[in-house]
Image: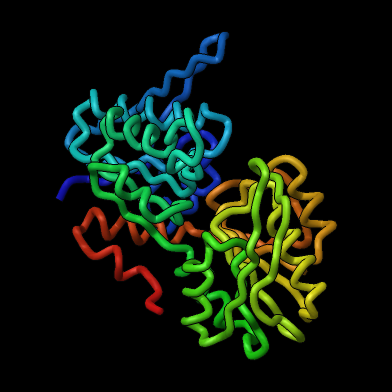
Length: 310
């Protein structure tokens, strides 16, 4: 069986080091040179000929993170790597997965094309914004689910009074997974927007009187939706509100929005590093799950065996 080599992009080293530690390997030797104008040149400082190469890099902003991943993939393709997997814990631009108005790009598809064109043979990621993005790729996609992280955590909590909630209609399937698994009620916050990151209105569908509510979403960007949903749920008589969000994008005034909201706690994964510390935010690591998925991929074993069955 071919040798495995793990490499990290610059902004995901905090996570890649933990993944490598669980896997039992050290990260590969890589240097990133930058010209004075900011142009990047990644250099792989060891042979990768015939090896299984895994590049670990989330593609959150700025776009340099995506570009660095593409350049690293190209570098080992030209160095005769045997099999190249892009491990992208957070897949950026996934929210632009369709034409919802005239003359806009389907950016998620473009990013998929770029990764394939660079030379990746396989993609590994967690919680696409929309599951159907897997269909944008013509190479295998290992789509890990954060339920494998959050459900074991929730099992240790008292859920006897919990109601699960989706902060929007699009996330109902995600929230229903938890409600079904724990056999708890589900409510929905129906929102509508006038433009991105700005909520025009929100209505709660379902009863939360006296309940401890857990909101479920794939990412928190400005945290405006979460904050608005938490405040509405408390207004409707809930006892408390917490939230599970896989990807802590947390841009703009997100930290202020979280602090000022009725949210008691926001539980996230470490697919993106936090820019600030907050007493309300708890981080759960994905490193062990990704390490196991990488090993299963290399050994041609099932990835679905790592999922939590509902």
